[in-house]
Length: 174
Length: 430
Image 1 (spheres, rainbow over the protein chains, first blue to last red):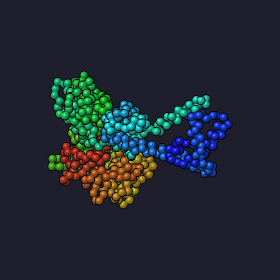
Image 2 (tube, rainbow over the protein chains, first blue to last red):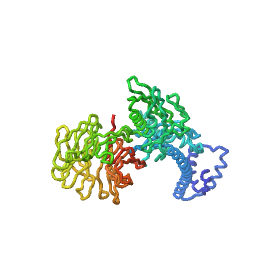
Image 3 (spheres, each protein chain N blue to C red):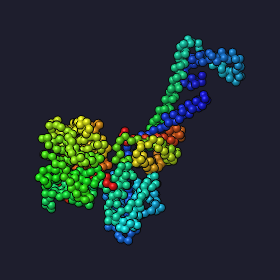
Image 4 (cartoon, each protein chain N blue to C red):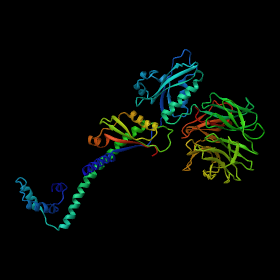
């Protein structure tokens, strides 16, 4: 009920919402505490009877839309942030990577990086090697040369969720 | 059981969730800068002075293909010669990626010295290689080239080629009226003449172990294939057939030679069995088939043929004798050589009337022109597959030039005297 009013929606669907609780309350003989009684009764007054089928349709729409909007906002917000910080990281690693110029073939190395919020790299681990030691070493050397990422100040929830630990995929053939 | 199963499923779910949700950042390219390496002058602990400085030979080696930039000693803050004397911070300040240090001592063996050396990765603060190299005091250049090879291999991941050699033919000049078959170090030093003749010498080709050379000589008035043992100079003329006998090329096992004979009237590719001293015909066509080159796996040969009307590169399976055309771009593709991995060919390609050195991936057929000079010919590939040396002209002079397989670094071999033609790169020599 409250969440609906948050979105300034006409309280029509409340009819459906309170259809069942009402019955249950009756059956189980649960008494409504005094404090919330007036409020509850007040809301009950606002209930407008309408065709249940229409109401059902409306409530499903309503209950979905706000939820969806809410999620999408969060995702949009962090995706642009994620890609912003990802490209800062990418740039700094690429400028330090001197990959063996002699390497041919499709080599890929995946390295898990652990950071602290200052941007300092505290752990690196090859989780998928290329099979060619000098190639893997060149990637590790690049990370060691970076040492600590610059310009990586970000909200702590974003850091914890995506940047405390992430994977660098060294894939020069792409 | 059910509880275990559900716990397992939950764990599986959690672990798959965490890997799926982990952010992945793709690193698709690196810096264009060469690798910065510092080679500290080797601490010379012998009673006589160095004639040639090891660190200078190593510097020249590493810089020859553009992949490394070597810090000169005058730019260094210290000259460590043992592991304990290395302070990573000093080298990081100088933007050095790798550091080489070492010291030379007298060996227990008379006339030999021992060099202990270390290679450091400065960023990761660790020794990536340490070894002792020993050799004759008189072969400082050889020792330095071997050290360069090791440094190259440890950093680049493929064998270095600074100890390999180059064979080539010197045409008669004002100094020398003879043709000469010469071999020298890859930097042009230590050149010697293997064979000299007033008649033409052609098509030098190294045995797979690098101990013998096959070539064509006209000393008997007609073309004949000879095999010469490098160490002893012993020469052997192989069984002569009527007509042309040319373009010898060793099989990877060293027991056979592919070559061109015209005993049937027109040139075809044949195999010569060195043990049985007999010839077997491989190609049979009224066109000209020439310039064979053995694939690294020994299963097929490349050759040039004009059977389609213009010279093109073909591949023939030695056992089935089935022929496949490889080149389709342009009307002149010739003198092909396999890369050491057998996946690429290097050849002479004519475009807009100009002869270039080009590469082609065998599977995809993708052609890439490497050189931009004209009249480039006779490409030969380094045994690590990374460099091509070829013959070309500069101001009407025959010279040898080189280019890395990525096309980024070009060089000429200036110290080779005379009019050098037909370069042939040795295998990696032990």
